Figure 1 (cartoon, one colour):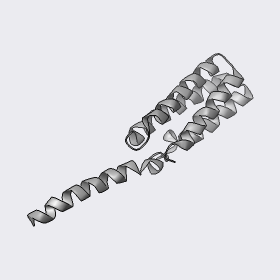
Figure 2 (cartoon, helix red, strand yellow):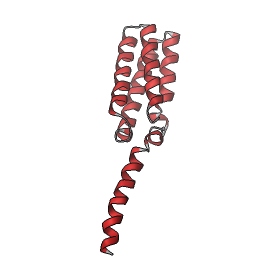
Figure 3 (cartoon, one colour):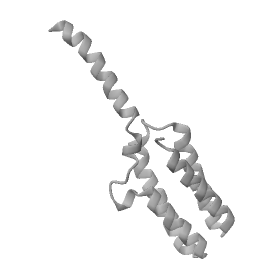
Figure 4 (cartoon, helix red, strand yellow):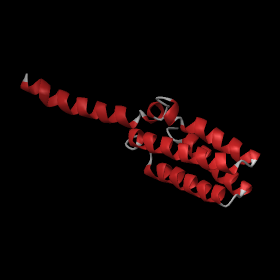
Length: 121
């Protein structure tokens, strides 16, 4: 029995860690409407394209709240650089929306969308 535990415990721990490392694409999926990052990205882009800056500001707030809910779930299974790059893109998009810069906002939102899709791949 002692020998079984001696071999089984390390294998179980390794299996757990492998499961955590490979669960990123599952964990980034929304658990509700309030943490759907990809859905919120679409709403922000639509508001920016219409030139509705007040709505765009509100939607970028909602997007950042959703992102803050997703980060703790994916932080152990995704690359830190990708997570940071997405956060930087959202911050730059917020600045472009505040400046009412359509081109800059769309550019940063597209980059954020690219980072979002590359997470877990």
